[in-house]
Length: 111
Length: 113
Image (cartoon, rainbow over all chains, first blue to last red; front, side):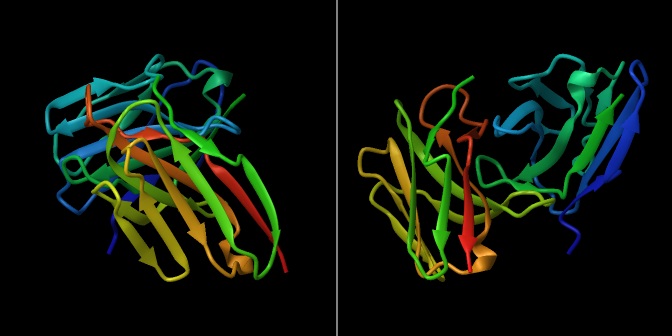
């Protein structure tokens, strides 16, 4: 059971570089979300999607883009990385209005 | 954004002790979820609650959906070293955009063997 798969697991970027964090789920879930986790701040929602072709902003969307062309994939794009985006990023998927299943996370450092 | 009030923020206990943590909100929730996050991993669902008053167990863990629908608690009995981690509560509020999970800030648990 693959569940939610995130790649890469670790990444170091220079300020101003762009990159895409990949997320794929094999559970046919409608909902997918991206969170960032910083010490003492819990999980903060970046963007989410309630189905293919539909995305919406979460709590901290600035500096990030998403798209949802298929049910399975929900990539997160950093357009121009900044040190403030150093964080651990989690992708999650869920059936409609139900508990979320998380990937193992991507640890991103921006220098 | 909206956030759940989770307490305590951290706990340091002896192996074998019982643990209790809770989550409160100023508004009504339809669903309460409890997750555990091990170091270096993503959160994993422990217990899901869907009805006011519901009491659900998962091994040594017990969680309850408060009758007012504004709170929930999680108890861990006879703690063991592998209980170490961060415990998060989360839920779907009754009003507004209930497609977004609202999260507490977590309770960090340390267990002294």
